[in-house]
Length: 117
Length: 111
Image 1 (cartoon, rainbow over the protein chains, first blue to last red):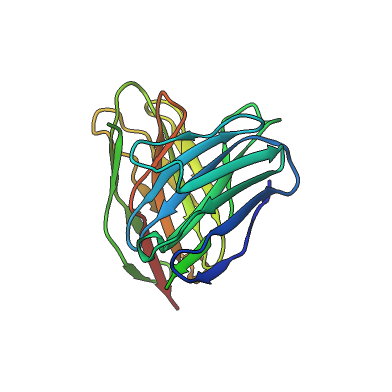
Image 2: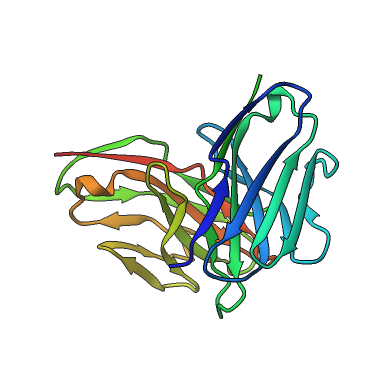
């Protein structure tokens, strides 16, 4: 099946710093990538949808200036958490939709655990 | 808005036991329904799906039937294995092509 990677798998940072998380589709081209956030014992919440070459579409309540998303190529999307604070600590998961697939299946990355001290 | 409710875990079973994980949904229109599985340290993987009422999705011995009348999509397996231990997520995709997930149910299978 299609593989999506995320880097780093876990990161610890100090409050006020910025952290960048990468999401890559390894063996397919992804016109659309999604970023989710997962709190302990809660479901995945969609944060934003990014389309290659255009601005991301953010879900209601998600601060676009805090969570910067860039989808510069068909295989890479990045999420930058700017001026991170402890409440941003969470598990961030990306997914990608295969450009060549006739069905809108999303392939998920393994997630990135962010801890802000 | 659209939502998915699934039973809380963990569900603890012995090997070869019968598994049911309940999932109900609320949605406008006719969503597609999914079960995803997340093994430790890995990303979510699509386990099975159903796109219309009365469809049965099946994979690796797991089954789920799209029940429009009860708005349910319960996951079942006749005989679980230790290797089935994972977190299972029920999800729907509605008219905006966005996935809406349940909270996940952890399954623990002991030998």
